[in-house]
Structure formats: structure tokens, C-alpha cells
Length: 433
Image (cartoon, rainbow, N blue to C red; front, side):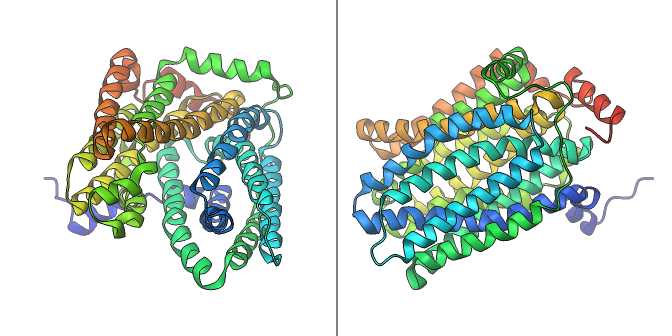
């Protein structure tokens, strides 16, 4: 006779799976390093546009920062993917982290001037975008090497928790620090976090490239793109993410939504709501480690995101809107867990950096274009119609993509050929994989 699990056991099954933190010293280092650096990065991400606003008083001047950041992120993200496959990934992470710290120091020096200059702020924004583009593929592609194959979903959940902590606490603290102590103090905190991060990165084990890799090149980037195009499951993860962000990322028009609802006080809560939803899912993500059908995560999570955004645009009660935005954040995180797990379970080691570079495109271009779509639609149909119609279009596009790429929905880590091949390669070369 089977004994029913106790309430304590049920609760423990929901809590985050900490196995990657116990089994991998490098994952522990990167997790703590990320926790520190995300907090400092979000401090600067809030302080920088606030300083531009203070210096110019122009919404356009603040908006230009996004345009300044986009092109370097795309270009260096693609190059960073090829670089991560050709050199020691530890060196890439360490070098870019040190560079980001130096850029934070430039912000600090500029803020300490009697009359801070505007142009260094744009220069630093572009530099941060370029270095982040170089770094992210190296970081993302390192996960499958340092975390056991069966713990990749748990690692993705823990990394998302770390990011959400920074996304919630960093801006909140930054607003207080800037208001009461000034921009220079906020940048001082950022410099200190990057200094601590570099010290942690120095303790990482070397992560040399696969032996058969060549120097970074356009040909290598094209090779990675061809591989992604030939794998319907991978193609589906990129396409679903792009569609969800393009049609249902209305953050740019939240100020107008708050006006429509007669609740100007809710604007900050709107921006934080999706992070709260993601955090709640992350804190109850233990069950995700026992799932093998990660394509369902991608599709279902994106559909929940779209439905919740549609509901947020439809409802006229601000509290219901905030709840919908939180549900949307939970859906987005679930879809992200599926994408990250599929990538780490199936992509060959020698292509992992280049495919991570392509992922930077879906991560960055989708939301940027989504902001443009939302703003244009709001000017044509009104704010709330632009939001709910985008959510509906998101759900429809996810359904169409799922029908066109059915292998995404049926993906099973226990039977997928690429996942089995990657597992065998890791088990046969544990010291290199």
C-alpha cells in the first residue's frame, strides 16, 4: 500500500531544486557572481536613464539610449557566439566583466564632475551593450559543460531566480539611492559589485574550446545559423520567443495604460508585476526538474503570456491588470525554462556559443520591435486595444508556429536524438563536456 506524501513532502517537492548548486563548484561561483553583478547592473540601468532625463528633460533623449544599445548588442552578440566557440569561455567572461566594471567607473567619474557630460552616458550605454553581447553567449554556453545533463532545468530555474532578484531589488534600491544620495553613489555601488564579480570569476576553472574549432568568422556564424535552421525543435524555440515578444511586449505604453485606468500610482507596479510572477514560479519550480517534455513548457508558457497580456489590456480594474501581468511573467519564465533546457540538452559543444549568439537576437530584437509595435498600435487603436490585440495575436502566432513545427510540442529529452547524442558525448568525455 502506497503512503500519501505528507504536506511537508509536497511543499519540499515544489521548492527550487538546488542540485546544481551542490554538484558544481563553477555553477555556485557563477550563481553568486551573477547575483552580485545583476544587483549592480540594475542599479546602473535605472540611474543612467534618470541621469539623462535630469540633464536634458527630454523623453526623446532617454529613448535614444535604446537605439544606441540595439545595434552593438546584435553585432557583438553574434560575434560573441563565434568567439565563445573558439577561445576559453572563462577568459571571455572575465575580460568582459572587467570591461563592464571600467565602464561603470566612467559613469562614476562623470557623475562626480561639477557639470556631468551627456555624451559619455551614450558611449557607456553602447559599450555596455557590446560587452554584454560578447559575454552572454560564453555564459549561456558554459552551463551545459559545468552542470550535469539531468540538472539543466533546475539550473535554468535557479539562474532565473537570480535574475528576478536583481530585477526587483536593483531598481527599487536604485530609485532610493539616486533620490537621496545621488547618481555618483549608485554608480559607486555598481563599480563595487563588478570588482567583487571579477574576483569570483578568477576562481572559475578554465573552459577551453572544442579541439576542432577555428577562429571566429562570418562563415562560422553562418554554420551555426544553418544548424539551427535544420533543427525544427531549435527553430521553434527561437520563433515562439520572437513572436511572443513582438506581439505582446507592451512595456513602452504602460504609462498610458496607467493614465487610462486613472491609476498613475500603479506604473511602478506594472513594470515590476511580471518579475513578481516569474519569482513566484521560480520559488515553486521544483516540479520542473521532473519534466521531460520541455517543448510543452515553451508553447504553454508563451500561450499563457499572450492570454494574460490580452486580459491585462481588456480589464478596466487596475488590480486585475496587475494580477494578469504577474501571470504573464510566470508564463514567460516557464517558456524560458523550456527554451534554456532544450538548448543545453541538444546543441553540440562545438556549436553552443554560436547558437547562444543567435539566441541573443531573439532575446533583444523581439522586445525592441515589440515596443515599436505597441506604440504604433496605441496611436492607431488606443492603448488598451493595442495591448489586448497584441496578446491575441501572440496566442494565434504560437498556435500557427506549433502547427508548422510539431516536433517542438513532442520534444522529449528521453527520446530526442540530439538530446541523446549530447548526453552520450558528455558521459564519454566528462572532463571536457
